[in-house]
Length: 113
Image 1 (cartoon, rainbow, N blue to C red):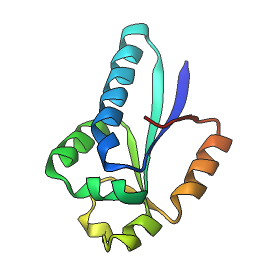
Image 2: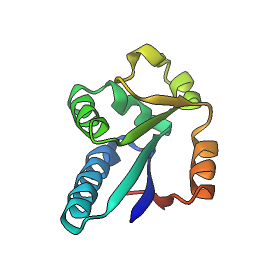
Image 3: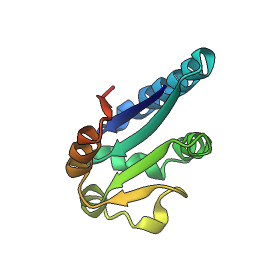
């Protein structure tokens, strides 16, 4: 069975907890034979996490496992972050809140650690 999940990160201190939740969910899925399509939507001050080296390593590892990472353009503008500063594979979305609405309408379960 395919499960769809969106993790919402809008605070810097939630990054590690969120990444741990995702790793645990992927491990659980492997153990029970279930698949998870995971999107991580980042907005607010948490957008700065995309610039942190240790987080970039974790993002790369999870991207290799088909986890999608989205960055809110509004948050990027607020923090003067350009697309070329983001880790490889991060998708920029015009508005994080609108992305959350779209994903939930598409059947994604919402998780905010």
